[in-house]
Amino acid sequence: MCYTLGMKIRVRYFASLREIVGQNEEWLTVDDNATVAAVRALLLEREPRLQPVMDRSVNALNRRYVSPETLLHEGDELVFIPPTGGGC
Image 1 (cartoon, rainbow, N blue to C red):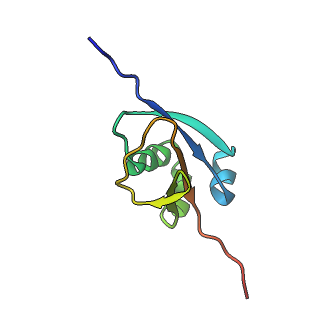
Image 2 (image 1 turned 30 degrees about the vertical axis):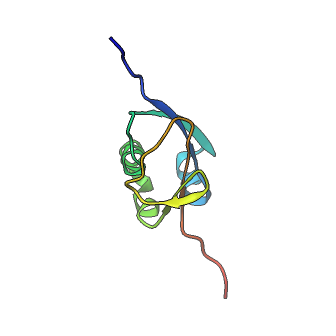
């Protein structure tokens, strides 16, 4: 019988997300066939204060913008990119 323990992905945090979670990055073990949306839900469950920023953030997987339905794979790098301000 074969048991899977999930897969490890790297989540990186920038700007206000980093301030809220208190770290630059972390490795998470997620279920096989997990999606970007599933990781987002996991992070929001763990830290509800992320909600306002996550609602306006875009998803990047391995340095490419992706939809929330995108499947994750072992060793992927997931980033939620918060909105930025600036300009005149």
